[in-house]
Length: 232
Image 1 (tube, rainbow, N blue to C red):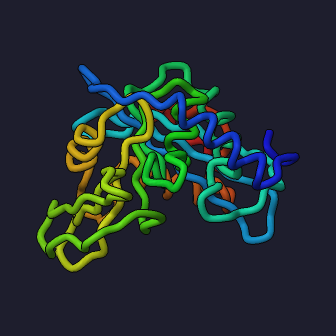
Image 2 (cartoon, rainbow, N blue to C red):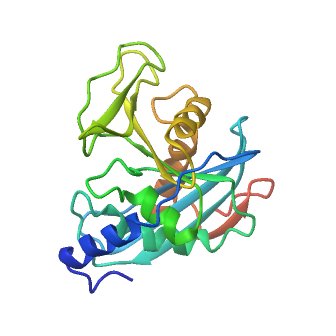
């Protein structure tokens, strides 16, 4: 999908896509999804996983797994070009789309407002939230060592997201609106997704599923959780 792109092409597309960003309050959220990617170092095969959970109960309902081949190199700020094609292929397997999707990466917390969550959100016309494990961009002060303490992450006075502490004595996570949702609602939703771990349940479970897929414990396809898992 993007293998023929140079980084100059990719920058131009990010700037173009950023003009399409919309932010609005979501109503009646009952399902939430998490997405993650896994791959072996120096491999062109991307293993993509999307899990769907009830919200706010965080009960797993279904998951989809798929592979995609890409030669687009990894470079900070261009993650969408490596991961979004695999995620879109996986997304196409899901018959009943979730109300909102959380991606392991950034939304508008990005130099060109086009992290992987924003990139995916625009192409899929889907409300998305970025939830990253490390800070890519912006000015930040570390939040207090208290659960759900937060600080705004800004660039030139604009709020691009939040650093939020999900547990005491753990590094914060970085939450930002992707597309078709507001910054404030993104933060409140992620708070309700936090369980016993630093990483919120949607992306944490997606991470586990996709790693099991990569090592051969799960097969590709769409799986309803009330059916037996398809294991090798």
